[in-house]
Image (tube, rainbow, N blue to C red):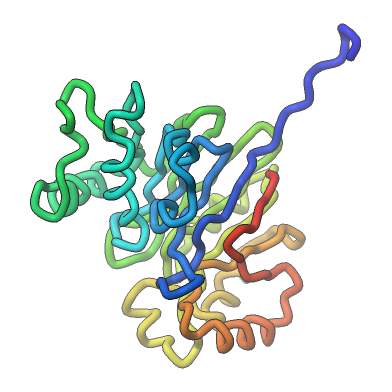
Length: 265
């Protein structure tokens, strides 16, 4: 490389550890590993990653406090105690962190690893972010957008050196997210939840999730015509029905996310 050549920026490396809306053999709840250092949601990574890979995680982004997005934080904290010289930063809204402290790491459901082994040097460290305000996690710029769910839930827009991708989190029909997405000039990938088949539309509406029918309506709000769209959070016992209904939409951008998928963004 000559003196005038600049190093080329390196894309974000994304590995799918879990991507389903429930667990049974071969199906795991949402967890994405980014650049081997950043975890996006914590549903199932402990079932997939080795000890060394878990010890390499420095940051966890939590979209919301429902069990299928946080449950593996419990055994993760227990596993890594005494093995790292700095805490793992848990990035979430103030309301989400309050749930984690009061209802999960509360010394009843699980030990308070935000205070263990001591409050000056804990295993986990709370880092509060504000919706709609950009913040840095390593080399990634993150912005959280509130979406529609029974509890406070965030979508994430993540920007690396070569582009952005969007993770919708758990959501039903929403507006603010698509307005933000449509302003992106470097969008490379969309990850959109679609949990229930159409015959369970009444459950999806009550629980704040999408079906193929409402997915089609939501994608009508999207201005990007050629960006790949990965669908995740599908109910594992209804995968065949969901695949059939998604195929019937006739949208070539759509693909169902699989455990082990890797993306460069």
